[in-house]
Length: 147
Image 1 (spheres, rainbow, N blue to C red):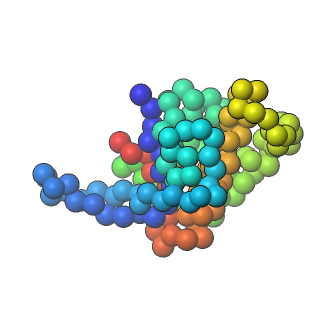
Image 2 (cartoon, helix red, strand yellow; image 1 turned 120 degrees about the vertical axis):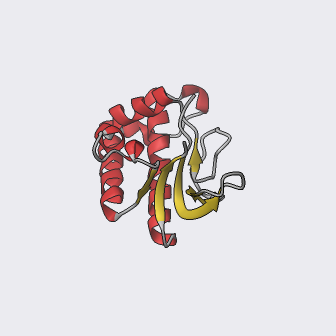
């Protein structure tokens, strides 16, 4: 089990069986988007396990950003958070702090030599890329935990 995380344009969908409207996030593929060997490479969707995302949040200093009961992105009532410059600033700072703490994440390696820190950095790169993209390209930018 795990999360299905999406960052991008909010769209409204109607369940054909119930007629209930819900918010979703339009799927996007960009060739230059971060990719590190997952089925969702180059897309604005990630499907990490619960523990992998919690480990990333802890290692990167983003635990409260995702899990705080009052404002954490993964605790939004309907699973959707409208993105703002505050979210971007938080991700930018986490990326800068992480890169300073682990400068070797920038070195070229083959996948077999990846450390946990390298995988966390790749997930941070995904967050930063799509957060920046959504805020620059979407009229209704959202972070979504599909439930």
